[in-house]
Amino acid sequence: MIVVQPVLEIYPPDGFDLWPVSVVEAFSFMPLSGKLSPAEVGTALMRIAGCNEAAPDRDRPPCPADALDSFLHGLLTCDNLFAAGGLRVTETSTGVTFLPGCCDGLEDWRDWHQFVDSGSLLGFGHDPLSPIVERFEDTVRLTVNADQYDSPVIELSITELRNLLTSAERDLADFLTLAGDWASRHLPGHCAPVTAALARVLDLPTPAMPPQP
Image (cartoon, rainbow, N blue to C red):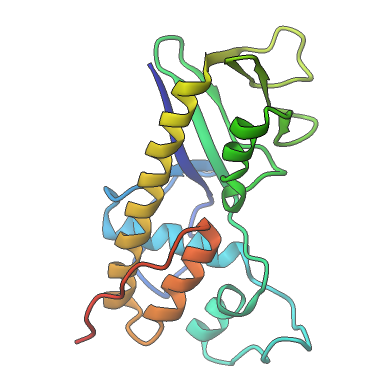
């Protein structure tokens, strides 16, 4: 069985106290879906906002002094948002796992659809780990590390990959809905712009906002 999951690269939230977060393993990947606990959603939002912390820019409003507003400033004002992570592919029968690379973040997950349509080589990173995806007629080969001559690989049909991408998109949409609900409770003054920013990061439509108390 092959599983495709949208994942976010996570760092421990040392000293973070703006909202509740979960304890995580250093440099691990958190699968995003509608099944996360509130603390896990808080951890995901912490990481996505942290990815987009930005230096002062004359084209954006100045960074506010308030700690919460300052932390969210990049997420809410940057034009090109990103999130460390991507799509993780696991072949459960062998344990082979294809991890996201450093050059194609979670915000670029739709590149997989372009690959399915065009068949062009899809690269995700560089030394010391260079994962690539190639298409050979109706077969897709995922090479965990192209710089390793005997690298583990995962092979599946193009039809199976299409179906798995549909499932991954559903997971992202469920996460976005969950995150919008989380923001309505934990960041009521920022719910709409935070949810809209997350939708931009994930390249998804902004979900309907939950009623405000």
